[in-house]
Image (cartoon, rainbow, N blue to C red):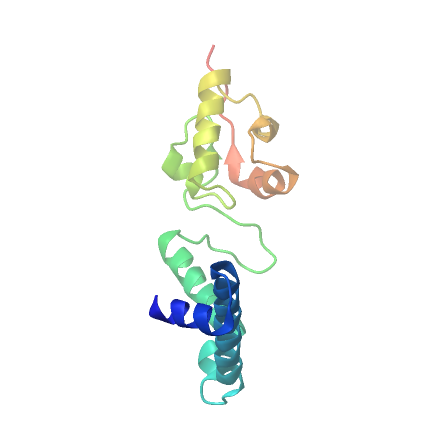
Amino acid sequence: MRLLHFFQERFGFTRTELIVVMLLTASLLAGTIIRHFRGNPFIAPMTSSAGADSQFVRSARAFHESVRPTLPRASGMKEQIPGGPVDLNRATEAELVRLPGIGPAIARRILAYRKDHGAFGSIRELQKVRGIGPRTYERLRPLVRVSPRSR
């Protein structure tokens, strides 16, 4: 506060002008400090955003792979689910989540669709579930089946 009064008396600035000058000075100082550290060869590797981003992506992938089980995939072969195709009319949320491209939210939508519309009549009906587009459907088609509707 004393500093503000000193500059007001010394240079005749209004309070608003003084605040603007101080903000501009602080911005200039911060920019100078950042430029200095970016140009320093010893600190640049630690502040490199590209390195930090790729390290973050690697960590996220490792976490994702440890949490969600991966499906066995041989080159040139279609994906397969252990235990055979998943029955859309009997599958639980946990079984649906094991399918590629199906997370917990879409699994719940499939279960809600089954509850609201009854049993699936065909695999093609899966495309009516919000979040399952043509690409996801093509990926899922060999991995799912539909048991006959009970009458």
